[in-house]
Length: 445
DNA sequence: TCTGGGGTCCTAGGACCC
DNA sequence: TCTGGGGTCCTAGGACCC
Image (cartoon, rainbow, N blue to C red; front, side, top):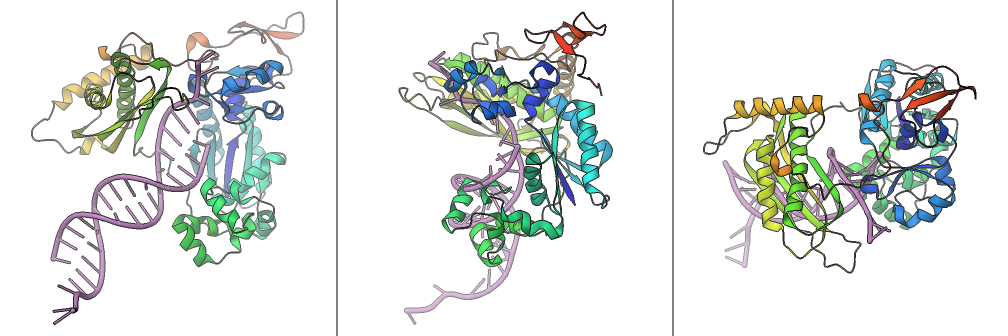
């Protein structure tokens, strides 16, 4: 049996851990650049804020219902995610971290009392991290995902046993099945296949022919035959990309180059973190497709490096070459990005006979820079080309403090009860949260 | 005025090999 | 007029996921 653990409204829940005053009010978290809604509390869903809605289109709704709005704080979410995963792994060591807020667990050693196991996992995560989770348990990963959906409507736990599969599939919409996306569900609905149960009633050959091996796997998994294994986590990435919208539209080469250099440096850093080098890269710039009044231009350029590298200077240098090929003045750019590909472990890089750089020297330099930046803060030491203009930087006007990752942003609380019989927050208090009710418990992990 | 960012896997078809 | 059989590797694009 597999379990799928999924954090409820994860980003919102992270913000609420340190803002207990927002426990019952509508809360949303925005995408980068304060663009779209990417996480909503139940209260926010109830007043009709749609997922993915651009903030400016629902400003009135936000104001009317006094919705708390946060810019995304990935340092905070990443850290809390880590704690959730570690808590889960402390109970069930066979874990696949599937995304920032989801994990599969292999429960084959826990055949009895799966409901009970689910509840104890759920309570433990809540107690140790403050994050509420839902848990679905079933014979295959696809069914565990499905059970997880159902769990959200129950009390957070749902178990599917081999003999209850058919019953569960009957009421389950086909478009909500893991792996069935927009295109395929349209295709299926045209043939009057609306539920997961109807899908599993089709002949196997037809599924294989229409949807290939991927569709066949979903089909069998829904019938309770495991086809998707628990995957090892922490494997090296096969491609790495860094892309950001600009805080405001950019027209000149220097600003775009500055932004792109920062993204390139970030890719190089990510490569070094997984001890890998990239053999090629893909650079793009683009105008804002929503601005119909502007002329559109969205070019990209691919470069094969003479020798795979994770050196910041080298990656920046080739990114600049690519940019030179595609940049044209006269357009208003809103985004640029770089993807590095053909990733290989750094100790098996095929050297180039003609253009090899003295690797060891470079390596020592970069290692030192990484160490310094880890200790002193990001970008303390950086390449000059990464610049000082910062004209392109993201908007994030409602960012919460880095409560768990920066010493000077840690929450401080006076543990003597004040006159209102509440704890007083003495540092990092915000307008609405100067006090914490005595019933709210913090459980540092 | 303002619309995110980061990934994986599969398939068909071309180019090549013996 | 007639032109085999079996295979691998690479790539672009599609579809999906969070």
